[in-house]
Each structure stands twice: as structure tokens, then as C-alpha cells.
Length: 147
Image: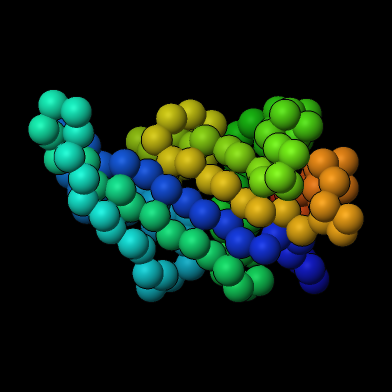
């Protein structure tokens, strides 16, 4: 993939008091380059329970290629492509929610648990251009996975 049409990709997940933080971090790391730094912020929930927010921002082209290559394994990539118009907002951000439990098991599925937000490069910064650029990146990543 010669060009990555994203400024950055943010990944974020929550680790609730009932979950093992190491396992949740491992699920998030499934989408990240090796040895990538994860930010950790500890919060308190409404009922006083501990909630840890784990997040990472990937800003290098090589790092974003790793994330896109992992997303290419998504079992419903065609559905994501069909829904791109709704998944890209007017601020040129692409959103995807990924199943945290599946990621822990090395799989990629749409679902709850991990939120992906990618800022799409679009010049001019218009929704239609951002959708086209996101489509190109996802299709190219999927092509690389098949080779």
C-alpha cells in the first residue's frame, strides 16, 4: 500500500472491574504494531467501580498499515464498505466498533468493545472525498491480505 490516506488512527477500549486488564490490553494490541505504547487512564464509574481506559494513537504510515492489514481480516469487510457513507462523518472521521472478545482470540469482528476512529485525509475536506479515500484504503488493505 503506497499511500495511507489517514492523518492518524485512534483505538480505544475500556477495561471494567470485572475484566482482566492484561487480557483487554492484549485484545487492543491485536491491532497495533509490535511494542506500541498504550496510554492508560484510570477512572471511577458511576457506582464507584474502577474503569481503565486503554488507548493508542497510530500516526506513522507504517503503523497505520499494520492496523489496516489487521482490519482486512474483518469477516464483514463488504458490509463496512457498503456502510462507509454512514461510517464517515462530516469532519472526515471514519468510525468502526470491533468485538473485544474476538480480538483477544485473534479474530476481527464488528461488535462492542474496541472503538476505532481514523481521521481521513481529504482535500478539500469534504465528506464525499473522505468516503472515497477511506474506501480506497480499506480495499487496498484487503487486497494486500489476499496476496
